[in-house]
Image (cartoon, rainbow, N blue to C red):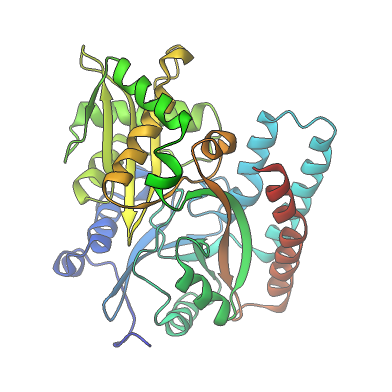
Length: 378
């Protein structure tokens, strides 16, 4: 059924405050200080799309390269995989992988896919689309194409496990589905995770670690700085500078908004040693932010403990669990299974060369990327 009412984009502070929804508060936070003040390597404009009862954050990028993958397809498909390849022991396969990335980079340049409007984009590694099932999608697509006639329209984090109705809606509406990554999901934490030997070992590590578990409603300035640093150590320092570089201001803002629930593991001396932040919507939980003090010895198991605390909180709330990508063996050992996640893209209003480049990109990714992800377990 089509959602009632005309679709509109809001950016005025008074209108956002009057709306009062979580999405409106989220957008207002970005507009009040500017995106780079919250995510240092993002430069998108953030607006609120309102359509009937639906409220969705929208991000607009004008084609620049080098920013985080949370709003940059070029970073998602070229820069981030390039960083991952550098960390993997691929042997001779590495040269073939780099060749594939060069082809992808060429197609992305021709298509100008980075010139994009992202719909329902919360600027996290995983967007949980919650109750939005794609209601009103054709009208929203047409409105955004008219407002941004030189931009692709994109919906990140689309899969048949997290949001089956939205997945069906984009397919039925003729969007192009680009495979993006393999994510690790747990259908039933009580059945598939809680009873695992690895999970029980993680619980023992938590009991013996000497750290205090806290789940505060708000985050003060000193803790926000420490959380941002721990996240940076784990994701940016160890893996890729293309991961979103969240600032302390972001940590404070997002905790106050209620979008994320933080589990903090604090040393008796007062310092946070590890953390995980749980996002949830419509019965699904995921952890878009976590981190730990990477200078501490591995035997302290800080990553395992933080992961356990997040999943345990999801279990307590009766959520299915989206474990995001990476650390595949770690997650399989704790009951997760792989699901291919997609980026839904529409460019029917754009020029023929850009549409052709998108079609070639989709064909290549579906032909080569999906079998590789499934066979190698990445």
